[in-house]
Image: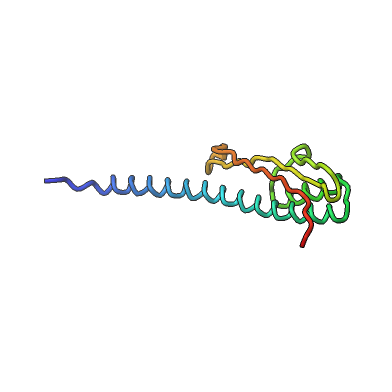
Length: 125
């Protein structure tokens, strides 16, 4: 006949499953948060490009607005990662950056999520 596992072994297995569950929950939470921040930045980027294109704002001002929003969202975006080409109706903004997805507790980078945006001015209908 089969032996039933000892109660201590059951507790160890349960603890391992709880640890694995918490670990994956934290990783997925970090990943989802990075994606939500990026979506907010993308929406803002589109808004700024349309506004700056129609009002013919200088690239320096457009870059400052984008960097300010990135800082507000907690996105580590540097000046050289924001490329601005053209002006007015030919305005195009490109942004490439990475966000670290970290291991819980030890705060070591497990994965780098890359984000790429290229937004051009388009006339509203």
